Amino acid sequence: MNRKVLLIALMIMVTVFGYTAYTIRTSSPTAAESGDVLYERHCAACHGINLEGQANWQTQNPDGSWPAPPHDETGHTWHHRDDYLIETILYGGASVTGNQLNRMPAFNNVLTNQDAKAIIEYIKSTWSDEIREMQKNGH
Ligand code: HEC
Image 1 (spheres, helix red, strand yellow):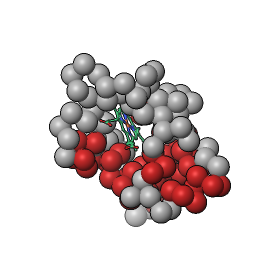
Image 2 (image 1 turned 180 degrees about the vertical axis):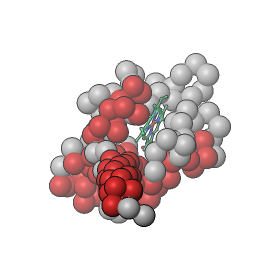
Image 3 (image 1 turned 30 degrees about the horizontal axis):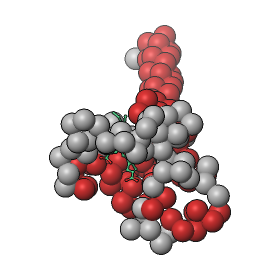
Image 4 (image 1 turned 180 degrees about the horizontal axis):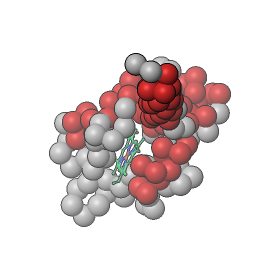
């Protein structure tokens, strides 16, 4: 091999290596999105942008189902422990309660366990210390 060929080979190697390193760096998984962003995208349409729930959420729909309740302190989300809430988010209300009329969708196709946790943390961050303390003893 003469020097010129060696130099070209070297240049190709540097280019390929550089490109590979660049690709690996830019395609590495992005940091998990924060709970408030995930909430806004996946939950706010039904549960309200300010966690206020649907209008007249305490009035049953004509078909026997219930509207989406608030996630703020006026609702009953805080009556439940984290693991129950995460299960509800991932597997849906019907699966968790056994009530087929429960319209809370399952999100396990779009959200990871970590996403569900981040959303719960966001919701909890809006509660008072007292409510947070009571939620720990929920069911
Ligand atoms: C298509 C509307 C809709 C979307 C979107 C939705 N929910 Fe719901 N969710 C409901 C309804 C309706 C209920 C109440 C079902 C019932 O009680 O029968 C509910 C109930 C719940 C409950 C149970 C509350 C309790 O106190 O028992 C939790 C927790 C919950 N949703 C969290 C979420 C989260 C977090 C998201 C976003 C990832 C979300 N929901 C997205 C409609 C929705």
